[in-house]
Every structure is written in C-alpha cells, then in structure tokens.
Image (cartoon, rainbow, N blue to C red; front, side):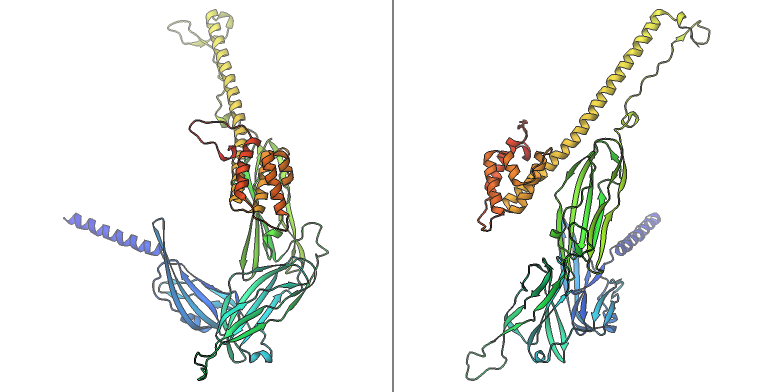
Length: 576
C-alpha cells in the first residue's frame, strides 16, 4: 500500500512537471506593427499588437504613454482549424499620436508574463501647411512626388492626401494621369487613414500612394487628381419639409512637373536598370556541391531589385559550359508592393548534366545597375566557380566483383608429413594442372562477362536520367500550354509554345511562332497563325483557347514519337 502511494505521488509530480514544460513551450509570440512606416507629428496612426496564442493576462499599455497619446483602442479575435489543428490569434489595435518628432521607439508591452517585441516608427516634424486660402476650406488635397528629377525607367513615389473636416457622401477621388510623356503607374496597396491638425483645425486624412516609372526622358507633368463629393448640411429649414439638400463639392490638386534624366553616361552598353537596391544570389539542389558525369544538378539564380518592376528585369547572362547539357525552366517573375514602392524578383532555374569528366569553370555572372540613391554605377555579381566533374564510379564504388586470385595446389607427400607448396610444376600431375587451368579460365571469363554487363547497365542508367528529365520537363510545358488555353491567356500561351518547341526540336529549337507553324501539321499551323495575328492586332476580338487546345493535343502526337499502347494504362499527356 505504501509503495502504491509513493508511485502515485511520483506520477503526480511528473505530470505537473510536464504541464509546466508544455505551458512554457507554448508561450505566446506577440508582434507589433504600424499601418505606416513614417508619420508626421500630430498625425494619428494605427499601432497593432497581435498574439499567435493565448496570452497570460490583459495588456498593460502604460509604457506607451511616455511618447504616444492613445486616442482609442479595439480588440478582435480569430480562430481557425486546419487538418484538425486549432490555431488562434488576437489583435489589439490602438489609434495613437506621437508626442515628439524623431525615430520613436515602441517599448515592449507586458501581457502578464508575456511581452511584445520592441519596434520603432519615424515621426517627422509635420507636412507643409496649406495656403491661407485653403485653411478655411472644409476639403483640400495635397500631393508630392519624390524624386522630382528621376532617371528614365526609375521609380517615383507619388503621394496624394485628401484632407476632410466635414462628413461627405458619394465621394470619389480620381486616379493620376500623365501629360506630354509615357509612363507606367502602379498603385501601392490600400489607402491609409489618420488624423492631423492644421492651424488649429482637425482633419481626417486619406493617403494614397503610387509608383510612377517614366519611360522617356524630358519634362513630364503629373496631372491634378480630382475629388468630387457631397457635403451634408446640418441645419433644417422650416420651408423645406424634405430636409436640407446636400452640397456638391469639387476639389483639384496642383500639377507636379518632373524633369526626367536620360540614361547615365557612365553606364555601359546593355540593359539599363535603375534601382534603389539590387542583389543577385544563387542556390543549388545539392549540398555539399558534387558534380559527376550523367548526374543532374539544378542551379537557381535570383535577382531582386528595389524600386523596379519585374518586367524590367531581363534574362541573365549565359553561364553553362558547352560540355554540359542544360534544361532551363521558365523564369518566375514577381512584384511585391509596399508603401515604400515595388520590389521586383526574377528567378531562373537551370538543370545541368555534365557529359564528361574533368576540370571546368562556371564563369562570373555580372549584372550592371544604376544606384538611384547614390547616383553611381554598381554591379551585382556571382564570382566564377571552379568545379571538378568526377567520372563514372569505379569498381569499388559500384560493388563490381574483383578478379579472383588463384592459389597453387597443395602436394601431399605423405599422410604423416606436413603439407608443403610444390614449386616444381614439372612434378605436378597432368590431370591436376588441367583442372586448375580450366577453373582459372572459367572464373576469368565470368568476371569479364560481369564487367561487360555492369558497363551496359551504367550506360543505360545515364541515358534514362537524361530521358526522364526531358520527359518531366515536357510534361510541365504541356501543362502550361493547357492552362494558358483554358484561361484564354494569349501571351502566356505564346511563351509556353516556344518552350514546347525547345523540348520538341532540342537540336534546332524554333525562336518564333512562325517557325513552329512551319514544323507542325497544317491544322495546328493555321491556329498558330491566328494566334500570332491576334497578339499583334490592335483590334482585339474574342479568342477560343479550348479550340486551340483540342487541335494542339492531336497535332502534338503527330509531331512527337509514335504512341505505344500499354495494357491497362493510359498514355501520358505528352503522347496524346
């Protein structure tokens, strides 16, 4: 009985210990974010605390009072169940005003034993006050552009702020336009809302940002944006039984003129890339990196440019040696937007297969770009890499049987004597000599046959690796063709067809849709000609992607290998 009580006590202690460990491991992670990276003094902004799990207690926001005035607060919770796993988040959103200018730290906030992460926000001394004629107005618009003298194809951040001191309805704000030049305009995220004081009057502010990329040098004007809305009157008239009629108001911003600089003279001949920051990185499919004849490896190159769009980042320089087979994937382009601008990413993947052993050099990859912050020429580089390609595995590595070693026969002179080696072959019996010669020859022949079979098996394996890689690549391309057809995406279909042409005619790949049409059956050639006309026609009509896919699917089988029937199996897509 005593032992039983002791055992129960030990189990209870272990259970409590494990509970404490699990509670410690599940401590909540609390992050803090703001809706804008920088604000002006006397402008309200949102400060959001978010917990990834249950917190220990209610938050204590008193440490914020030193540098911030809390105007309002709200909370929200969210719970989700994914694959039977329950996760919950909780947010505390504060509307605050900074008490001073500068880079203001946001101190950690205690949630019982849990604490939020530290952060900071940049607070400027304030925006330029409106003119005296606008101070008395209920609504006005401010605009600004940075920089005012950009380089051609570089990024300009255009900011629109709508100031409101009265309630409005049926309101709209127009998009910016460009006069006298060509430019690309991209809106940056959602609108920001905050409050500010101007000359003793309080305004609600709606802030909207754009990224503008001038395409030609010279003078360029950003046209005014226009606000249109109705102001509700507060007073009722006894002569108007239906109440006051709303007042319609139209307000316009001032135009902004940009002086766009041409390509810098110091920039070398080639593709012009003006950016705030640019980086080029690499990664490999194998670590540590080892090269062997017939073994595929994939190299991934990633180019990231701040202040650019992905369409401005062209194909990277060639780097694959002539003695390597290469199988490039289609480049992946992406644009990431924030209130600071656009960050573009271009990712290229190439599978390479060495076809001979030896020492090789992967050349340096260098991309010149113009730093718009420092106005200097810079290069993003990946240095050259010296590599060693190992030959096919030797006997020991592959488990190939070794050549048998034969020992001389033992001559027994007498039952009572010790065995000794007979070094005089003339004294060996003839039958024994013939036996050992036959056995030696048979074993040698078996070893040679084993070596021949291993060599053929290794050669077939290397061929299968290349063929499997080609087959996988072709399946991916055919899937892209089908998806582009079903989505009626003609530009994507053109790129997918060019990749299909590279896979189908790898020895002499076509470089245009016209070349592909010349190598395909007449029915598909007609469809490709219609696609080509559609892409370059100014008058856009409807495009039937499903019809194209049905013709392509049949024509692809005629262009490729013969169909091989397999009992009980469906042919893969690239053979249909």
